[in-house]
Image (cartoon, rainbow, N blue to C red):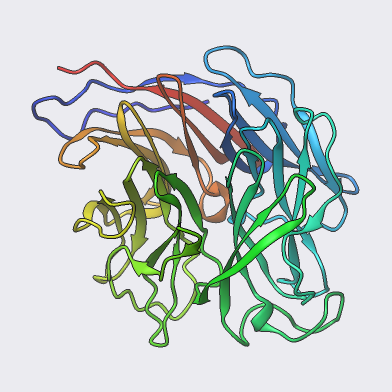
Amino acid sequence: MRYLISTLLLAGPGLAHAFTLSPLPLAAPAGASAANLAHGADGAVLVSWVERLPDGHRLMFQRCTVPAPCAAPQEIARGDDWFVNWADLPALAALPDGSLWAQLLRKNGSATYAYDAVLSHSRDGGATWSPLQPLHDDGTASEHGFVSLLPWSAAALGAVWLDGRNTTSAPAGADEHAGHGRGAMTLRAAVFDTAQQKQHEWLLDASTCDCCQTDAALTTRGPVVVWRDRDSDELRDIQLARFDHGRWSTPRYVHRDRWHMPACPVNGPAVAADGEQVWVAWYTEADGAPSLRLALSSDAGDTFSAPLPVVGGDTLGRADLARNSDGVWLSWLQESDGRQSLWLARFSDDLAQERQREKIADLAGRGRATGVPRLAITDGGVLLLWNDVDKRQSVLRAVHITPGSPD
């Protein structure tokens, strides 16, 4: 692995020395892709990925407790009818009752974007899994994906997803040209019980970006969800809703960038939360140039500070966020002179101070080949996971990162 630790770009009181990087060996073979991270109920990090088989795909996961070696990988599911995409990743969630939940995408028609988001859960640590079933019941051969999972209670799962039921009227399995281009993509949320039965479902937004990632986090006032909205003027800004006192709040803008974008940028927001503090990061080209922005709410998402411009120019976005006692961590991709690179920065909770910013790796891949890097907190640092290319094959890289000592 080629990790390039850069010279610090900023100087000033309290700025830390270089991050400490420890590569984390994974059992993912060459060709694995669509990698993601989740937090285990025991503090471990769950690393998931998709492997290609001669007759389809399988979803795998590995439990990692840094600095101990990762446990042996386990298979969640396999199939010959999956939709595997560089930006729409399978997801895992661990509930306080010890159950594990997994989500992936399964084709439901012949059109390119006709697929279901399906769920499975395990009550024995991942040894056995329930049959896959859709988390929606509209029965349309349309796009359903970009799912975020989160613990709703000790034993209930919350799920949020982009739902394309209004983009086509064709039933599942039909040869209709389903997916993009008819009605608007919607955002929906639901809660599932221990029997994998849906208990509640809500429509959160009747018009969203077709293919930007969603994200979710837990505050002391309830779950918050962030996504990229789409209005009648094709403005594509970030919205947030919170579930509080038995209902979802009216969606509100994190910031009104007013980015006019008559197509989907495939670049969703990221959110992290602690107590009533909520941090949101997102990509925009509202001012005519790429920009990655970061904003803070101190009232569980009711209001946000003016956004902090983190980086412009060469940024590709594809951001992720994490927060622990060391501060707020933000990862993103950049591209310069035809080469992509992966970056990480660390901020104080109030975003008043940027404590570190470094290039973590130069990447061999470009475009979709580098996927969407993922970030998760660990005991004493963060785990950063990304996709790259080696000998024309997709490869997964993971590194545990701890802060440098302050000056």
